[in-house]
Image (cartoon, rainbow, N blue to C red):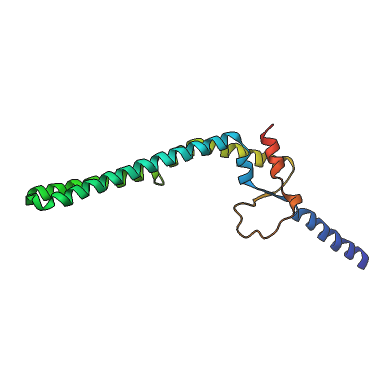
Length: 169
């Protein structure tokens, strides 16, 4: 009877060990960067971001110039003209800040364009990871890029290249 219990305990631990290894690691950043359309989208977004940033900087320069001109003319303006100019400058500053939010903010044009370009690629990559995991009966996929508590993993569990190969079929 003791031998039977010992064999059961050993089988239980052995079975648990097999189940415990039913996961893989994937480097999502490497997978994304292996896709030509992703790299093209990132390049397009970088170009767009630089243009938007230049436009914002130009708008702030224009605001600074307008404020500088006002400072020079301030002593020569009547009280009503001074108040009008100050209101114009305040309105212009609000417009520039609003433009900056509209193009670079979290709900701005750049973020909308990023979503438009990256989301289909992201969905395709995640579908490939899911398909790979399901076809190989893995119960969990961990991303080595976004896992801040990951201290070590065996390279044999890294299936990044397999996912890339699946995407490139």
